[in-house]
Amino acid sequence: MSGTVKKVADVAFKASKKIDWDGMAKLIVSDEARKEFATLRRTFDEVNSTLQTKFSQEPEPIDWEYYRKGIGSRLVDMYKEAYESVEIPKYVDNVTPQYKPKFDALLVELKEAEEKSLRESERLEKEIAEVQELKKKLSTMTADEYFEKHPELKKKFDDEIRNDYWGY
Image 1 (cartoon, rainbow, N blue to C red):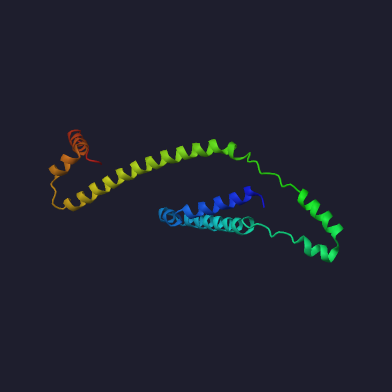
Image 2: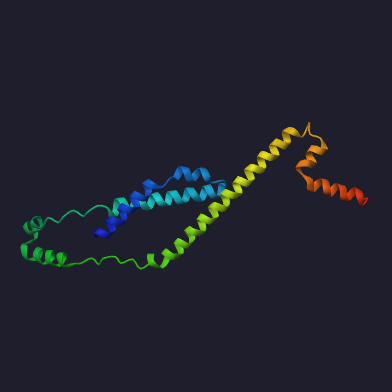
């Protein structure tokens, strides 16, 4: 087996150890996304298993002496010479350089989206806290206290009263 294939299998195996599948699963919200995630994980495990079993093992060496005894040395020597003359070409990766810039651009876009999402999440948490606080105080709050926190509503109501607009 070529050394490159073994390296690929080793890298895939090590990568699988670093993936936090449970952590990612906790972030998924919709049922459709859960199904897609399960499919992704299953496919990844199948490919990783194939790489580990099929490509990570070295082939057993051929016992040429065993075949010399049964077939004859001239024919076996001819096969041995042909077998040893076979050269497996080394894999040259032409795809990665093509897609690496696109992937890096997606990573930058992902980081920006993550930051935007975190900011939005913080804003929403603050808003939720304000609404919960308002909910607690609402039963004992006066109109003046409410309008103190929301001056735009006070202005709107005052304008409607001044213009004799009562919503009819």
